[in-house]
Image: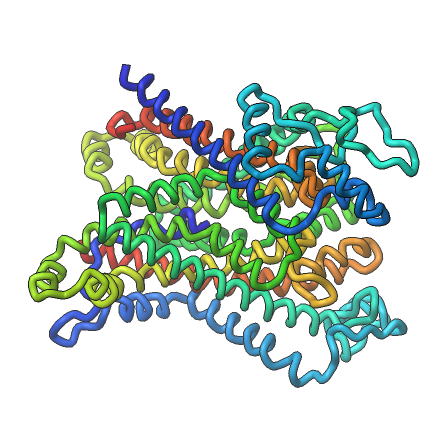
Length: 325
Length: 309
């Protein structure tokens, strides 16, 4: 079957990309100056202690050997252990640093799996909110090119794309949580805590969706089959429905491409709202130079990119069979 | 945003048409400047730019000097301690918010523009090469763009800047190198159509070298439409720069940048809300002005090419 073959080829290509990501991020982290061991043992530790810990951790081996060890674990699904985060329960005693060689550090895969559901919940909520808002605005704009709905869609797009997410997050937290007390915002206790961060992300995503919808709906409405539908006496609603099916393909592709925007947004928004998901984990991993954790997250993220883009392509061909893989 | 902002331009026509007709870039510009959005954006942008360039020079105050007795002054018309000397209030060290915001705007614009230039040069250069040469050069460059588009660049960018000490140059480099693949793709697709055209074949018959054809015949037709759309990317890069600053991975304090002022102000949000919000208003206004211009130019470009085919 053609589909299966294409899927296998795409998956194989995806695997190469994920491995490439692993190699690039692994190398960059070690080439760029900044020693994680210094952070682990503390600024006051003598240099010989730093060197000893670094050697025990294998950080002084040649880069290729280090990557060999890492890739060996990777194919078995082992993403390594965090440099900074102990297993839950194991608390570092006062004055004693977390020794990453002692094997009581949390596994990167556990850390990621633990955080992933909350981030998925946030991303899904944001996507739904963005679509709920963008669909009416974008479709109205596309159906009336050059008229006020089009201008409105254009203006909303320009405005929303100009609101930096971190600033919007702070302003919303100030107004909605502090002044009005409508929604909670810092940390996570129940689903209500997802809403405000999701609104910020939705505002960030909407301009792209609105613009794509306006352009593609307007383009589809100029096609001959729309006229044909009207000539055959189909109602306006039926015709528009046909147009939407065609206009949904670019939208779907866009969602695949905008995944990186969503990821960037998630990082910042989770950090601002102290939302305990993957984004916050990433930012903290970077700030703590927790190499295995950064690598693990980058690899998982690129894996998700690859998978989503394959899914998008498959879904697009299901909607519009004229497309080729 | 570059993801959607630059779509393959339609068939390009020679930049200078015979018989006194205006060039395509000129017509795009003329068309765009009839739009109200373009005018509003342009006026707003010029005002903000002038303020950023001139005010720090003529105000005669130092954006880094603290004045403890004047700390936490609210913006004008808010509260009862405000003064005309500090229209946007002061921060936790008594530094003038207006001045700091404008300095932030300088850095933000500088980084945004330089980053887009870097992206544009690298991306368009490789795209031209890829489309014109074809063969293995094309394959290598295109696979490189594929790979880079699937790698979560944001994680890569914050990792590099987080692990090393960020400077203006490293910020530009990291942001610029993450954005070029889209330019490469668009320019390649247009170049593919262009190289089959008669004037290119003619030039080759006359003995022009590949470089000469690329630089003098193809580039002038392919690049201007892409350049119009690159305006939108300036805003996008300015946002990235401020996000980096906010995470502590951008321009380092005490030098003010939008990101680090807002990150600082967040600590005083309840009692001195203006420290975190006022610079953001500036940034959002600047971004709106750029996006209005950029989107108007993009629409005009799309109209120009739709009219031709």
